[in-house]
Length: 219
Image (cartoon, rainbow, N blue to C red; front, top):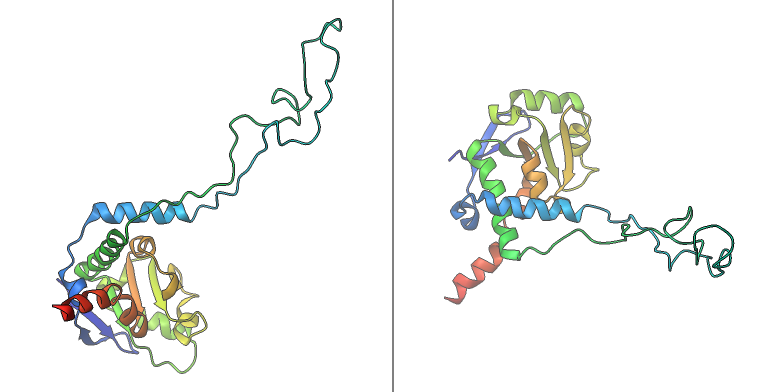
């Protein structure tokens, strides 16, 4: 397994990070990743499409014409689905597409996604010390970064979108910036390489760890 490297301001490796116990012991489970990614993508669907049935459409209270003697087909309401402006049969209604996935499954899928990047060597932690935003400096940083980070698209995970790192990377081609609090398993899997700020990594890698530590302390 490739070590998790720490990159300095110039893009060269300046050290290595030890994985948390839960992440180090996690086995990659593609079926759990698929389940969680499917649920997250479904949860992002708006589900705002809506139509009205014949009982919800305004009007149509009076019978358009008498039942017999006109030569026309019988009609009881001008809001029938057969009429223009009438109700819709089996049309869409506002709904939620998101399903429920157990927390333990979500946690294993999250760790599996990170572990897959670690084993491929396509993830690194960065500690930039730039004083001001600079796309030129960010491009030079990536040019000197390890080979695994050359794969695109590259996802840069930051603590805040107004940080120096975020402003430096966001204008580069095939490089996307995302705040750590909104990162999901589907984002990790969609990126071919990841660059994570040190503060963000410490928090993301520790997801689920306090519970494990508490259980060990109880023993």
